[in-house]
Image (cartoon, rainbow, N blue to C red):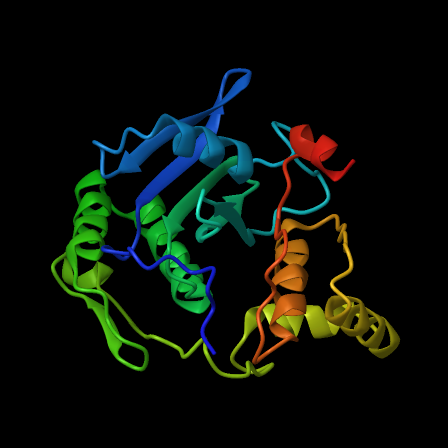
Amino acid sequence: MTNSRLRSNVATLFDVCCQVGAGGDEIIILQKYPEDFQDESILKAIRQFAFPCGMETSDETDAVQLFTFVLTDAQSCYTFGYCRFTPRNNTCICILSGLPWTNLFYKFLNHISNVVNNGTQDDFEAILTNAYHIEIPNIGENLSLTACPPNWRFSEVISDVNKLPTLREDKFMLEFYNAMTEKQMIFLYASLLKERRIIFTSQKLSQLSSCVFAAVRLLFPFYWQNLFIPILPSDLTDMLM
C-alpha cells in the first residue's frame, strides 16, 4: 500500500531552500534558492512555520532543533518543510520538498549549515544548484552531490520509507520511544485506530515533530488520512477550536 497523500508531480529534489531569520521586528527570508521562486503564499508559509512561535526564543538551550512541518495542497497532498533552527543566531534553514525522506534531508540540512557557517556564498549556491538539478534517485540508490567544491561534496543512500521503521534507522521513532511511556503508546495507538482527534504539545520543536510523525508511522502498513498538522504556528491555534 502506498501513501495517497504524497505528491505525484515531484520533478526536483526540493522545491525551494530558504534561510529565514529576524529582520528587525519581523521574520524575513535572508536568501533562497532558486532565486526566481516567487510563490508568495509558499514563502509566507515558510516564514510562518519556520518560526512557529514568532520571534520568541527559549533561553534554556542553544541546541539546534531539527523539525518538519507539512503543507497540504488543494488535492490533499503533502509538501514537507524540513527545518534546522539555530538558536544561537536565531536563523532557520528550510527545505521544501514533496519527498518524504526525513533522514536524507536532515543530514543535508546539517551539511548546508556547515557550508553556510564555514564556506562561501559560491559554495552555498554550488551545492544547492547541484541538488536542485540532479536526477532524483530511487529508493536504495545513492544521492551524490559532486558538482561542487571537493570539501563540500555530499553523499547519502535513500532509505526505504515504505517499510516498517526501526529505532536504529528512524529519528522519529527513537525520539518518540524516549518521550512516551508504554501505556501512553498503547493509548495513542488505540486512539489512532479509532481516528480520534489528537493534539501533541511540547517545549521542543524537534521532539514535537518527531512524536507526531512517529505516531502516524505506528499505523504501518496503513496511512493516516485525516487532518495532519505536525507543527502549528501559534497565530493559527484558532484552527483547533
